[in-house]
Amino acid sequence: MYENFDQIHALISQPWPWWMGGITIGTTLFLLLYFGKDFGLSANLRTMCAADGAGEYSDFFSFDWGKQGWNLMVALGAMFGGYIAANYFGGDGMAHVSQATVETLNQISQSDILTVETVPIIPGRDIIHGYVPDFWNLYSWSSLFTLRGLIVILGGGFLIGFGARYAGGCTSGHAISGLADLQIPSLVAVIGFFTGGLIMTWLILPYILQIAI
Amino acid sequence: MKLFKYMIVGFMFGFGMWKLEAISTFRIIEMFHFQSFHMYGIIMTGVGAGLVITRLFKTGKVKTIQGITHRFNDKSHEWWRYILGGIIFGMGWALTGVCSGMMFVLMGSGHTVFIVFIAAAMLGTFSYGYFRKYLPH
Image (cartoon, each protein chain N blue to C red):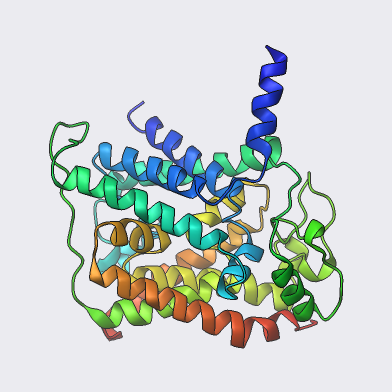
């Protein structure tokens, strides 16, 4: 019995191959449609604003947000999923990126601190997966109190919240649900996501990460 | 129980995204440098599965739990919002390496600083709602 559990645990803890994306996303989409809902996580941000009384400032937030409780539960579930995956099925805790990416990352940090075996899945220390080089320790409270970390965390959050609502959806709402429904507006939005992503990754991010204050 | 089932769906999604490394900034940087198929594989198989599933529900071959055919809303043809909003979202996605679903997963993963990220995202959403009438759509 315990041997079986160990085998299953070891199997799940391995890094998952890309095609598991089809199964994970497919199951999520199927179940939500089966329950009569639409898959789209960024809508929660609007709900959370409305629940905090933003309706006083803009009609955009005057809607029956109580009916959106189900989507908040999806987000809460995702939070638990992250907790269990990180703490019990984290495997080696590495991102397993390609050699080319390691070279790109080292170029950005102007050092040779990372190798294929040592690129962590998350650029920040947590309780389990100890070591992250200081340069890449972005997701931490100490990083928040540097200009660099402040831009990465506050700036990224703001742009995502603003952009997702402006575009009417995010990666789940447009890139998955919208494309799967052959919606041309979603295709335009996804092309926008990639345009913005390429501009940031190639032209802006390397300079932001090099800010030393 | 009515709402609990959604938590299970979210749990599977969050768990899967963590294990698929889709929550990893480094995977996002890799994707935008076209250095691996991994993220594209996730999106493509996800959309592929989604196409079949959406067809099944749209044609009524699979009914919802309420026994009715699910109604899909066509997206409006306001092109500017998709272009401009899309670019802004994409820039945020690449800046932190996190999108709006993954921020919840990372928060659960023990990176409590994401409470600030989520607050910033709410502020972003609020700003959109507030300035909406001045923006091209």
